[in-house]
Image (cartoon, rainbow, N blue to C red; front, side, top):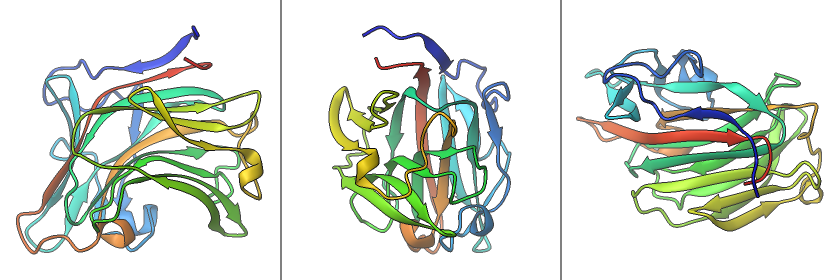
Length: 234
């Protein structure tokens, strides 16, 4: 099925560049405040932690030599309520690291009422990587439908399709569907025309998903080859 492309970033800037501010914005500050979950990192807009090399975006978490950590968390300027998002990603499963490609809503902008869709999430705790759609209850994100998949530290193409007709989220790995979440699966469904979604790429450190980083020489990366979005199904 053909569908109009509405967003694309192949990270074609010179080596050492930041991700384009026309497409992405950095969120900066302590991860324990921004991300919760007892995370250890501070998110920074630094080329030590987010940079382009050979047309690949690197998001890197580093240890600062004193038991503190820096990393990067970027948001897409682009947003849409329905349609297809696709990304070619490579994750290294590293103790202490918690990389993710995920989505938040914008209306309302407040968490957790905005909803959360974790398309690709890898855990440094040793647990199986997974995909999860969340809905809120009061001031917490408590309802979820989740599936696990096998991690292998290789390049894969991941796709999220939010169907405007059914409201379903459909998830694909390398072109093969592996998970569906329907509005009837979760209470307090908060996704629709009123609530456009934006993408987040980040590498958390520690916390409930990262676990305890090694005592020294900690470094972890997620690699992004390209990200694209379409207004409908592809």
